[in-house]
Image 1: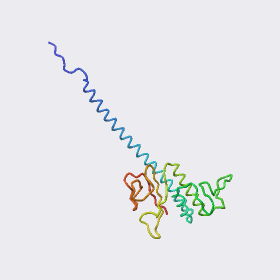
Image 2: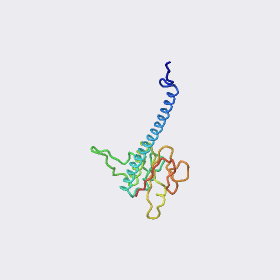
Image 3: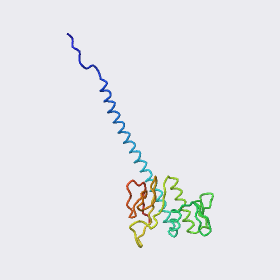
Image 4: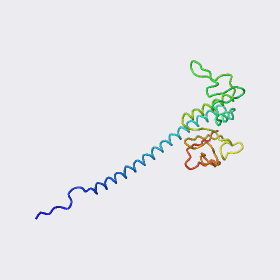
Length: 187
């Protein structure tokens, strides 16, 4: 008599197990891809923030007598600041010439610094972030060593250096877990 083999091909259970393993592998790859995209986005925002803050530091260095006006404009809530009965906007204090914009001779140092602060703030907003200078300088610097601290934040993080939940860092300058921000010392 002829005896048949007990297995002829792939059974339904084996196919289902193979599909289950494939589904788990695809889900794992998808989660890994999402984490990579999030890390890339965070890196891009940090690079943008660093670029904006470096520009702000260079602007402060070019006009050291106007740092207080620059800081007030950068930390203010308005796109227009009034100084010496003159309304300053981000496009104020500039004359258009044929070759390139030139600084107007009628603006004071404080007005120029205010314009620079408003321009930097508008550039940061155009790059989906907030930027400001720490109110009391960088944490841990005192006396003649006080340094200016740029703070850039994005997402739900605020520019604050305090104990609030959404703050970028604590008052001592320690970053908070999950904060989406960058702090840079400038002098």
